[in-house]
Amino acid sequence: NLFDYNRGVRVVDFSSNYEGYWDVQLLLENAPVDFEGLPAWCTAYEAPFPHHATVELDKTEWLDIIVFNNKIPDETGGWEGISAKDIEVYVSTTSAKSGFKHVVSFRLENNKNHQVVKITPAQARWVKFVITSNYGYDGYTELGQLGAYDDGIRATSIKDEMSKKGFIDLYGIYFDFGSAEIREESKPIITEIVSYLKENPDVKIVVEGHTDNV
Image (cartoon, helix red, strand yellow):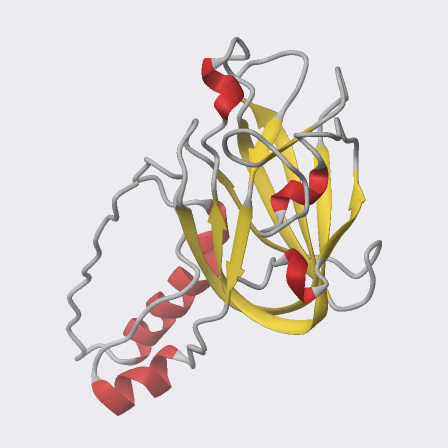
């Protein structure tokens, strides 16, 4: 996990923080805060949307997998709707305050762990998460521990991939969790597919996909 406190990774910028058992550093694996149940970051009381937290890596890294753990103990403890809902992800190699490029936006499922997003590979020293809504609780918003990984796979162009092996693994087609609706961020790769097929009218393709356990 690139988001490991023991690697020197820290949350270096954030919109607000409840602290204690809900400190913002609990977004990171192995954060040295005692807590009961699952770790989560909680905003300050009645802090306005959007909420944000920026993770600084120990060095610039490639990443292409982000894992959200959004099962929040407070959801069943009297704070129903406190889980983060709509979220945006940005990366920067410039600083914790500037140079950010939008990677993806999507909707997390309510109160579920291990929500995995495979993104187009991106280099980052800083990764910023922006929460634009929760599931209805007025006072606070909470987000559970995050994971970030690099599986080392770098997609090339569709043309190059097809010429080498006749099949391709596509990156950059996004859905909200629990949804079959393709998000707006998917347009660039879909446009590339359309262009390839127009240039190669004899090519016939089969599109395959699968769900996971969330």
